[in-house]
Amino acid sequence: MGTTFPDKLYYKIGEVAQMAGVRTSVLRFWETEFEFLRPEKSSKGQRLYSKQEIDLVLQVRRLLYDEKFTIEGVKKRISSKGRLINSDDFLPTEPVVDYTVLLKEIKSALQILRSHL
Image (cartoon, rainbow, N blue to C red):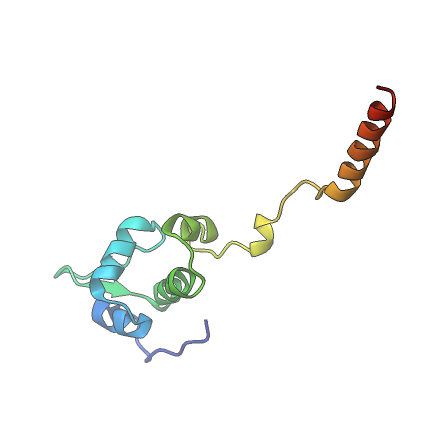
């Protein structure tokens, strides 16, 4: 995401919350909703986030707050392994139907039926 972090292996939840601009309770909630957000815990129970997990937190924040995705939308957009799914994957797999041509054909068929009545 282009964000630079202080050079450390792990970051505490308060630091991550500050980087993301959210409260720590929001991060804990996201942990319950997104299986790809599972920070390690220290022997004292302190959540420890890696740089990769911080990137995921920032992606979730962007999708929820900036792009207005729902929780379910974020779950579909980021895989359970924490990989961003390409937006091209959401394009329809079937060819797009040109409804104007179809409607013109229906109209002409109805006109023919009407003329026979």
